[in-house]
Image 1 (tube, rainbow, N blue to C red):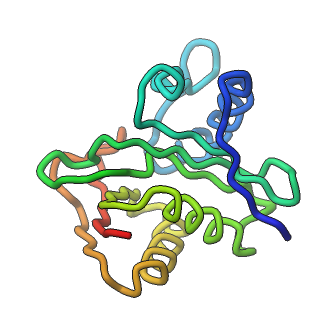
Image 2 (cartoon, one colour; image 1 turned 60 degrees about the vertical axis):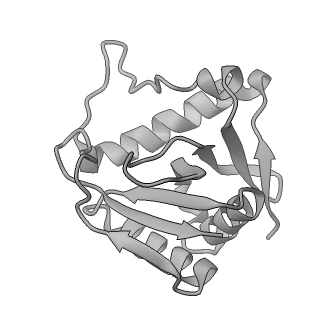
Image 3 (tube, helix red, strand yellow; image 1 turned 180 degrees about the horizontal axis):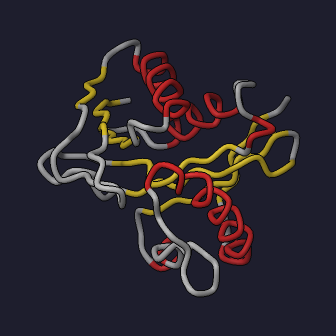
Amino acid sequence: MKVELKQVTADEKEILKNLLEKYDYEFSQWDQRDVNKLGLYGYEYLDYYWTEDKRWAYFILVDEKLAGFAMVINLPEVDDRPTDFQMAEFFVMYKYRRSGVGKEAFFKVLDNHKGRWQLKRHPANLASVHFWNNVIHEYTNGQYELVEAYPRTEYDDGTLADVFFFEC
């Protein structure tokens, strides 16, 4: 199984938009977000990935097939800690989960973006909790900080996020 990251071009924005809908649908079980009047979640920051610097969107490909995406920005998740990068969104489709695809894709993202990181997770998304605990611990050799229920990090459902801080 060959895992690759491919930077999303402006011509491929519609493909990423479609995948974001699948991601937001799945995530709505934790953040309780509703669809809009068109039956879509929408992603209000999508165009910024092609109009602003310091935003990177990648497709995750497995054997040249779409398997998910990773979206990185340089804006901090929490404003009282310095950062170079944060994972805005990360999604691996069900077919490719628990096969090492997510880990390999995440490691490739970190290899491409060296610096100080912040990464936020919803504590009720237990698969995500397990995944991020394991991959961040492995990549950093345990050199990270995790703050649970970080102040001012509310999801749409009011839950405070857990936030990882690490360097690579």
